[in-house]
Image (cartoon, rainbow, N blue to C red; front, side, top):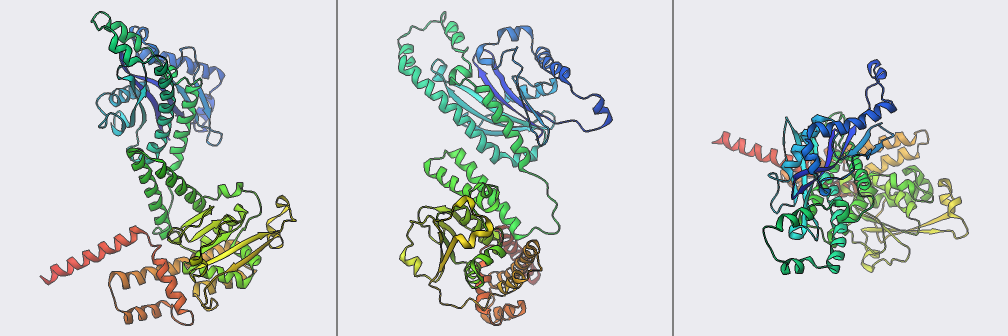
Length: 559
């Protein structure tokens, strides 16, 4: 990301000052001219010397002489911190001031504005300002406890400066969430030092008993202003830690939003994923602004766990033990009849419960089974030590000792899969192909309806799964096409029945037109109604807006 992160401080003697900044240097393009001017060891030394020259060029000798300990982070002889991203070759450089004179003036202006005129109510919190000429700034001001400061606290800010206004605004929730973590870490560390100093010598009582006079006031003020952030936090590796935090922030923020070429209109799954990401970031944003208590933090962590499980399989690879690789693999292990029963419950929206000790195996089964549903219909709790109700999740993983409530075990809207492992087999020696020999899967449900008639989607999917000439990738594309076909039917039925409010007879005609009638008509109808819950809010609001706009237009024509 083409941006710069800086930590700023309001000194009581010298005003706003930049303490520490991290910038990203992108590798040059592999052109002949750049190869001639390749950066060597000597050039790196020249860069370091250039940083000092930049500081001298932008600050007078008097200002440098007046710089106190509170205005300084790294000594002049310190070479700074450098981190290199092996994937992209980007270098992250950290020092007290930027290495380029143009950036120095931009950061200096952002620092002054963030600690003077551009502040939010209460003087603590995030704010956005800037222009096309001097760049746009995301600023977060905060206080650090200091037993020797006026008011027992000092004023700091973290600013991110970038020229891309839209990108910076879109990254607001992400930046706010992670900068709050850095700020809370600094505040909590400084608070411990503050409490220990107050325990030894309470400054409030000392100040109340001291005699105030204009002659001694400048001396006290000058002495209190010379406390650095390192002494306030007693953190031995404070600047190295901030360098790591700022470098990661620049790298993560740069890779968070990427351009993607969409062929045609976005699918419902894409819209739902965008909505969920936006809702998650907005909830974190509101929590960071209002203060997160223990309960919201727990809810947020559970939400993050569920989100990582649903849409990122990187964590699944790290779990030990065998795993299901595909729907065909799961069908081979469970058997044709048991797989159809389980897939039927998934497609009908019933709660699917897997109970066992092997977390990796259960989560891999959920990863495979969730591909049968639209993203908007998936609500999962990957693994829990207590039962969760069906309105919270339709995929639930439980540890072996968790009992199933009687109202759930007797319900036809749930299915239980007990995973029992052979004690004589070593888990490390079990491969994916040996799951059926090592594990026993007991499937139970109170459902008495037949599962061999429909829905039509499951019938077509089983034909594809049973055809060994079709590879796993081909079957996955076949399932994707089937889901898109039935999601289009869901949209038609939603528009016809929910938006237009048509009667039962008209709805039956539409079902016949959609090919949802026949032997598995009841299952097809249940599937369509359940999948309506997976439609994106964007599509529903667009549909309602279009219908209301059409009604107003027809009313105007009648008038």
